[in-house]
Structure formats: structure tokens, C-alpha cells
Amino acid sequence: MEASILDLRKNMKKVMSALERNERVTLTRRRRKMAVIVPAGEKQARKTKAADLAAFGMWADREDMQDVSAYVRELRKPRSF
Image (cartoon, helix red, strand yellow):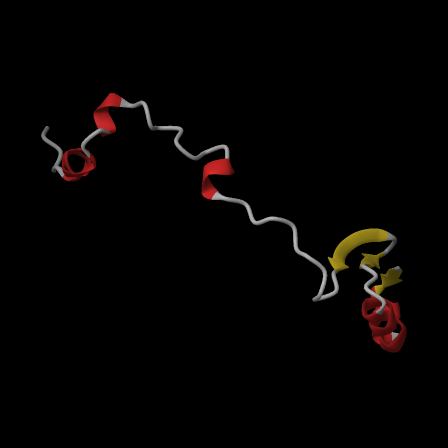
């Protein structure tokens, strides 16, 4: 089902009926898709694991960061002029 924000305000009963029938409701504003309301009983998409993210492990092969404590200590040292 597709419903505008105005439909959501004025016809909440129809939107709730669609959700009870396990339909997804797409909310639009000025004919542009804004959100999707998913029934609570519907299985959610699998959760993303940190290991699946592009940035995970991007510094794993850096030699200067093998000892994290030493690296942070080096960063926190005062500057010498």
C-alpha cells in the first residue's frame, strides 16, 4: 500500500488495516518515497555485522599500529620545537 502523509493523518484506520493484513505501507510526501512501515510480525532484514562493513579491518596490516598502546602514547607526546 502507498499512503501520503495526509492519508496517514486522515485515514489511519485504512493504514492500520493494511498493516494487519501484513502489507508494507510506503509513506510518501509530494509523491516522493519517504519511509516504509513494516508490520511487526514480518521478519526483519538480517542485521549487518561489523565484519561486513567496508571500513572493518582497513588498518589491520599497518605495522605502526601493531602495539596500540605504544601508538597512542606516541600520538599523545608533547610536540618538540
